Picture 1 (cartoon, helix red, strand yellow):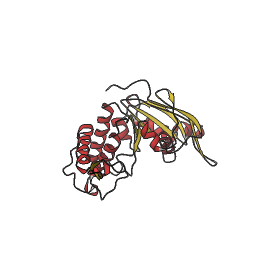
Picture 2 (cartoon, helix red, strand yellow):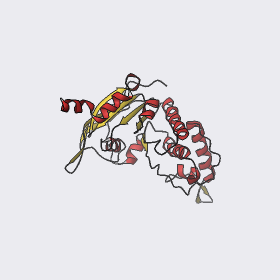
Picture 3 (cartoon, one colour):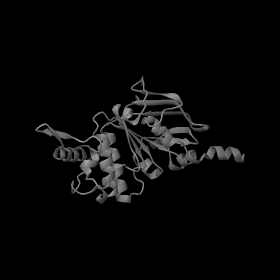
Picture 4 (cartoon, helix red, strand yellow):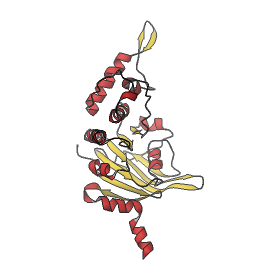
Length: 258
């Protein structure tokens, strides 16, 4: 799917202060349908704070957010989900002792009523889990009965993503370090999942320390440094060296040397 030029969501002049500490200062961000926007930067650059504002976990001290050109205010992560914005964090937040279907519907279980008594509809949850994994992600697990702890890293990632995309309103998905601690084959599978979701028209925001991953799947790269946006570049028009230079502040270092 070709990416839309009109952003789904626009963040403008976002500033976030925690007491006397300024975590973000005047940061902009645009996310478009059918696009992977990578956000890169060293630890403490402000990536996580920016994303937590986008997903309703934090509220900005200053700045505005627009969704489809209209002002957007969110007071919780639930507000963000309702508006089609969700995130899959590095921790995945999966219950290892539960099976994949139970994890996918954790907190929003499907039920059925028999003789006036409500029961969990385990059969429907399993069939729905199989459907969304297969139809949306192209993933087929060997067993839907196994504990999630027995799945590979890539399969666990797929379950976490499936939980997010089961929301029919989902339009923007943040993925926080999705390949961290994965081997080469599992990393390749996870990057393929990102490409699949982009082709379905989602706006994907990828936070990653791996420039290899970023250059493999992203359309644009936004570089953060010390709580500010250093710049945003088109991936195919830049190089790893240029992006790395923006991350470490090569131009600032050169000016100091002079």
